[in-house]
Amino acid sequence: DQQVKQNSPSLSVQEGRISILNCDYTNSMFDYFLWYKKYPAEGPTFLISISSIKDKNEDGRFTVFLNKSAKHLSLHIVPSQPGVSAVYFCAASSESYNTDKLIFGTGTRLQVFP
Amino acid sequence: DGGITQSPKYLFRKEGQNVTLSCEQNLNHDAMYWYRQDPGQGLRLIYYSQIVNDFQKGDIAEGYSVSREKKESFPLTVTSAQKNPTAFYLCASSYDTGFGGNEKLFFGSGTQLSVL
Image: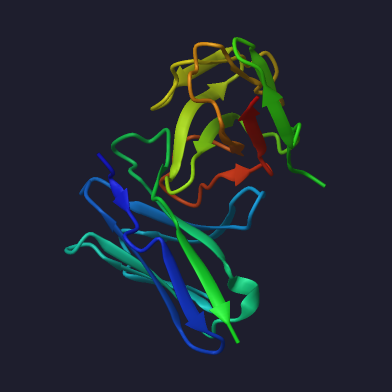
């Protein structure tokens, strides 16, 4: 059973516009969420995280929003530039449950075109 | 520079053969992990280790084995019992295993394993 879901396998966005990547989770015990970026044939790199005590976290052009009641988080990238074209994974964990590992979603491939 | 080194980048396995993927880190991290990535799927945890000489099975440990004799090293052996070994394998480490605060995983650049 997929506990962390990224229902859009791919997303195409025009350069300069906003990219919104979505992630849904089923386990209400999750209280810490992360986004990772991955280029082909490379390992993922950490992008941004958010704790369940917050509903928004911002780092430069990247903002993550958390809606606990809907069990939904989203990553906003503004503005979108070709350099952000990559696969984005969301991941979740819980301090009180399964603390030893992150649960990853299936990823969304973001392509920014001119 | 500190980081995680995986080798080789590409590896080919013959039927019935065991192969070992190397993972070394110089970040002084206690915890190390092995993930497998298949097309269209998320990263799935194979094994992880919180401390030297100790490791635990992840979600898909069957057909794999690991050892943790040194803090810096966490090699993964793909045995002949793993019937579908073709995948991209990622090693990761973290300072600790409690993902409640600012903890996060640092990944290596991966090893692509293919079956001949």
